[in-house]
Length: 326
Image (cartoon, rainbow, N blue to C red):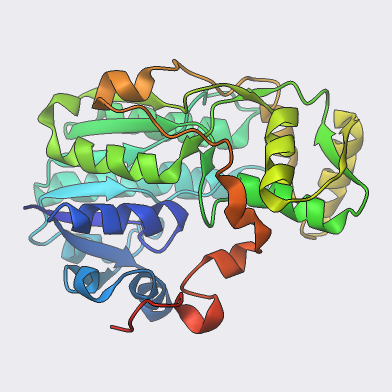
């Protein structure tokens, strides 16, 4: 049994990683920014799981509280990241790169050598691609460190509380007749279950053979954007006409929304990223971890409810039916 510090414990990936680690017998130190974040983590766990989780307050992006958070820790799982911003990449660099660099420095200073970092598939240090550049540079910092590192690089993640698929579902909800797809809809992805990513994180912590490796993780098939939209509709039990929309038109609307800080389902940076396929080897997960990742077909049923209602920390008074309070 190890004691593992998890950054981003209250986020989407963290909400799946923490119970996976606890279920394998590890103790988790959940790094959170405040009591509200700690409450979200607790609400997603059952009574026995809560007993194996302790909370420490800190913020890798601000570089606050990291030395205290690392006391008595055997390994770090670094999950803190954001997917978009409205300031031309400044926040993406600050969080995705700066937060990772701060966590690396703190781990080295504390003598905590094991470091598992969740990156992203298909990223490249292209200044025109703000998210991709920030993630690529963060991964490079991890690889350049003196730590015993592992970098996991998943494609689009699906599962309750996800980002991408819930965005598509929200588009379906707001459009009674059609749902737009950017460009031709032929951009390719390799959706990977967040539950499988949690397993890979746990196995990485447990298996020293993953040290010094950067591992691409995708599902068992490739999907186009149009096929993903069709699967979202099936999961929601909705019927819409799928309509390609020229990227310049979507980009103009997204850019205007960003200028006045209005919510819009997709960022201009994300639209630029669509020119690159987000796929890797189909056997990447099996080759690295010995299991075939689950297929996405028929599994997007959670999209029948809004993202907030998929979360036991916010839905139905904060706890799903049948889940006892701690």
